[in-house]
Length: 530
Ligand code: EPU
Image 1 (tube, rainbow, N blue to C red):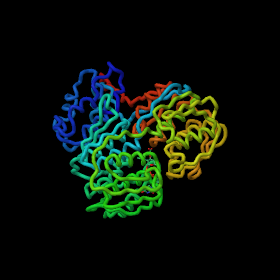
Image 2 (cartoon, helix red, strand yellow; image 1 turned 60 degrees about the vertical axis):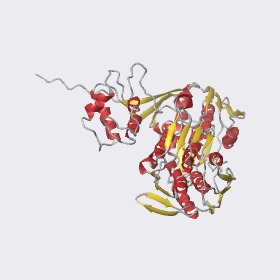
Image 3 (cartoon, protein in one colour; image 1 turned 180 degrees about the horizontal axis):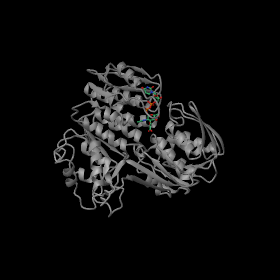
Image 4 (cartoon, helix red, strand yellow; image 1 turned 90 degrees about the vertical axis):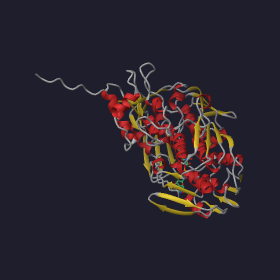
């Protein structure tokens, strides 16, 4: 099922291409595309063509391609179908063009619910590669990175069932036959966390071939520490044509000292070590709750891990892991985003279904800036009746202030009395949102890894561009307090990690809607002059 909804109002819209294409799962012979794994899904995500004039999709396809287009790429077919719809006088919609339109000024009031943690769900899905029995994961957020991981695992031969209806947050992954232990560039370039399959694949299959991720909007993100750790566990590593290949008859235990704290690096090697021969000791590990959650799942699968969530993890390797059922922890970054939204808009917001223990650094910082919060075991209420005061902030590894909340905190700092200095210690280039905030009226100067934010400047609506997942979130927050209607472009970034954010925010009083780019009807040919 697609996470995208048809943007056309009910009645006006006919059948979306998504719905039509779903009748042909990738494995079956498609009447027009033949066997093209992945193609129909890619198309389904990209195009929504309303067929309110009862233009059946088969007719659209057969008109476009009288012959089977074996050598045509999905984006090309997408573009062709869009032009065809336009030629038929139908508005055509490309989901990659989604925008948010946000009118600022409303305080957020009421209760907003937090979804499962994307960054815990991704390694949990990769962990299913370690066993030939089904792994059932609950509280999986419906976000695009999950869909990308489904494709990644399916391309290796895994059966990944994403739930529907009431079970829509459950996925069952069965990796009985892994035919192709590879992660292609096509997938890795859209989601760097794809490299999480490296460790489990080499541990289970004895071989893994994974594309190197390359650069990224938030800075260089090498995977040298994953590779070094696997070598220590006995894997032979080669690199060519942009891919890293790891092979090992069986990994063996060893002592891994991380030069630098890495979250997915710790997770990757933790998974690899579960099936290694002997004991592995990992030092200077990431202590993020997502690492502890992964270890919980692995232990349910029969692994013998101690110390996850601290900087030293010990793993006693076992011969085999089995299936398990596991509930993913709540998303602390989504919770933090909503808490800041409540404070920023001067609202009274109950952020429900989160784990306040995972939010310590943020709650302390909010206390320092004068924002009142109250917590229960699984919720945080934020009361934004006091205007915030400026306070410096430094991002650090957990339990420090998360880099994934830096952009959102910057939006808050623009509305605080005084000057806040924000230091980004984890990534080298994670200030792309600053210039967009400046376009909305913020006073921010970037000096290397520091941003100097002088508050409190009124924000005014503007057309702005989202550059990565958390940058998009900060622009949404700024727009909620800006004067007028802000348009945020490229919200596909936010769809990677926030589940139905516009619906959730609307539910607590925000004025936010999603629009697609509706291509204009083709102009009628000018009448010939007599
Ligand atoms: N690093 C290396 N070598 C490595 C690995 C990391 O030098 O082999 C460096 C990175 O360049 C960076 C630092 O170590 O400067 C920390 O990177 P880390 O490996 O911890 O980041 P990650 O595992 O790739 C995860 C989250 C990110 C989050 C960071 C930091 C997932 C799937 N991703 O990334 O989440 O920002 O940890 O907390 O868990 C997001 O959700 O928006 C996001 C980017």
